[in-house]
Image (cartoon, rainbow, N blue to C red; front, side, top):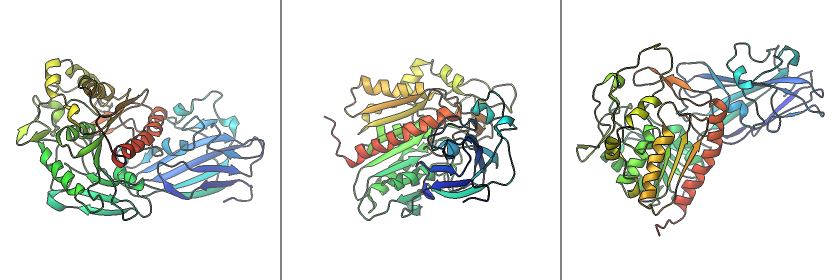
Length: 455
């Protein structure tokens, strides 16, 4: 679309999965002309996100966003997903990750800009935090709208409330039985529908499984019986869409700890992905957990609490509006080697391959260290299936699929409202997402679609 200025903006395809690149091209410019591109989006929770980048047109009067580095803006490298992962939250409560599987409608616009109004030397990532940002002109010269999906057209959705479960089932297009992946959330609880829907869009049966902070389930991450997940595993394995095909599990943060624990407990789990996980069981998270002298267990099995580690340090003092980094506390807790050894997850019992993802600047907890505990244990026990750990420099606690905002480095925790630091930065979070997500998809294809052998 264009106006009399001649600037045209093309974004193709007009609809795609959130993890797919979008070809954004500006044409009809004068050679060397400076043009500002902006992206605006509302997510499924009603929050508004924006990004922007300033480019100089090439000798043909065109700007190919995938191949051209911005002169300024919310990101600073040639990247077809840059306008999407560099979006900042500008309206709405909270800044946590996208968990809702609703489609994302994005408006793109292009307008002439003046490079002379920019600072002489600029870091585009620092510019993302500047109140001024790139110059804003009049009405956009050109605009385009695209829709990005977690659930591709043809993926069906069903609420599951059988046998006390609170879950959402996403079925891929087609009638043949498919391998399945159970997706469990972290310490925020609720239903992790976005990841389950995206897995279904790539051909897996995806089950987003809540275990607290949803409907009749517990309000807190306290004394969650593993039998609940055993019910889900059996229900999913017997579903006609799965038809006895293998079942894997994926979780992030406390959900990554849980994914390893489920794999180590239930042999019907044939593959485990832990995103910023822990190879050690941690205590539960009741209301006011950070002030508790002794915290209750997070998990039980056959009525018994699983051994866990727990910090007994007092509540931090200082500015309550400053994001709280918990990684130093977790690292001090890990110094109790006896307690850690007792709480290690017996990952060698997992009946299939293991893939772990961590961020080396994780400030929520030291996921790189906690994942290494699991990897070292797998090595000591000569785990007969493949196991890999990808740890990303500069990345924090939120490593999601590519193409969604990677700018969140702190937000209020849903259990107590305290602002928690996640660590990382937008560029490294986005790089980790772009590298790890294809590895996760390939891992599940190899593990669940190809017959596995422990020999």
